[in-house]
Length: 431
Ligand code: HEM
Image (cartoon, rainbow, N blue to C red; front, side, top):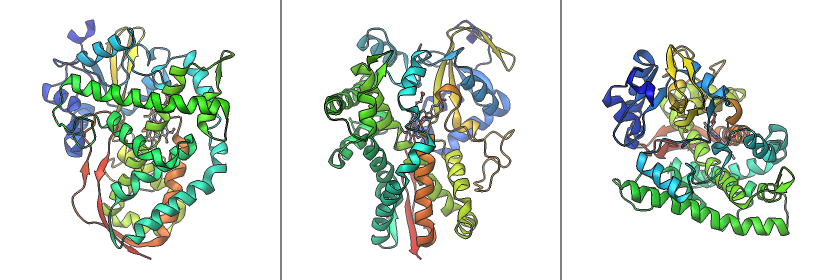
């Protein structure tokens, strides 16, 4: 990357923080690094031994500018999540030169991206999802009943937040309930591959080879599982998303099996860990800010605001990468064709130029221009579902509790890509 010599280079300790999964488990460490960058080097290049140099984009306006320009800033050309050189080379070896283990929407550019997204985009529209609201409310009630039946304490993450969105998305996909533990395990291996409690090796310090094997093993298991589902739904279509994907066609021909399996795997992973993280983050914030809990309990019409603020607060997708397909000038810097850029959503969601008092959790923040769902052509396909799941959950939970407080130390996952709370002990009093 030619520009790396001219562009400002991040201080090595800031780069070390950005590439260190444990920094993301310590919210102070990662947010301090972002705050420093926004103030002193909003667009600079991170250089380190194991990674190709990459631009670090930390300002809200710049993340939007890059996200909206899908022609210049592409997803298909290089890894879309931060990947070290060894892993990148191995993935290309395993996939005949492609930088991606799968071929999902997040790995495509137009015209393919538009065609594949169109297969399910009307399915994910708020108007279509509305017919599922009663079923989702029933699932929320079930988990809340179980939580309240436990007494007045629980670990909100492991007892509730992990399971509710998992069950919702698996019902939507058409995965039987007995296979949910497998789906959860595989998702943890994909997103928590660098966290010893979540990866397949159980090791905090894995070699790059072990990490890659864990990741590709999870992807292959997903593929085998969904291969069976594809065949079944082609023979016996049902009212589920798996049938929509299995019977989808692109340019008049049936969707390819690699693409179909990639599609399911994306929905099966992206569709629950993120919502779990934002729901648990909302509960944690309500414990920390009891006045906000009192406000939303007294004014249930503020629930959508609570949901939006929880999504901003947690920004569970920490980053996506883009690759410049041509030279581009931004913030007085020359980004060159082929350069790699990290869009730091969590940083954009704390940008002082956009959010007053960004480190305060405020459910009545209006407007709330959070960009945790990204923006532009790749903006989260499941955003309406995520909002609905969370809104319904809080509509059901809040009338049933009098109080909510922390009951011990919380912990966060060590994850550079998607992460959030791993454990959240809480105490509550039923209403
Ligand atoms: C893409 C965040 C929930 C499915 C994305 C992106 C982000 C994101 C940041 C990339 C956007 C970009 O590149 O501009 C979130 C957050 C969620 C959430 C914060 C919850 C709070 C969901 C759910 C689904 C889902 C429930 C359900 C299926 C997807 C898919 C994509 C995506 C399929 C790829 C879209 C594309 O590349 O065209 N999400 N997501 N997400 N998300 Fe979500």
